[in-house]
Image (tube, rainbow, N blue to C red):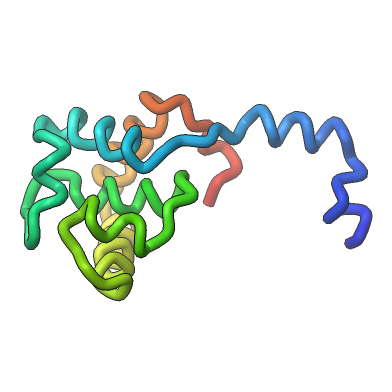
Length: 119
């Protein structure tokens, strides 16, 4: 386990590093808003019903290093619990809807994120 954690398999480490791209929350929000035909600023409004808002929050948690606290203002939310609830609702939609999953994957492709091994 120590060898695996230290990354003794250099080929696998290089392969994994190439697959993972660092993406910002802003980039994810912009791409998601564009895919849903809304302005990204709509997501930052309190109780916004803008299309794709939950998906943008879910993708931000999945792919960016942004904390719940950092994401709050981007989605018109003050508390970390509120952001967590938004992401949790999005996760439920991901699990229930193949159409929702397809839309999320399309955004990931636009952002050039390799989702082959990401769960």
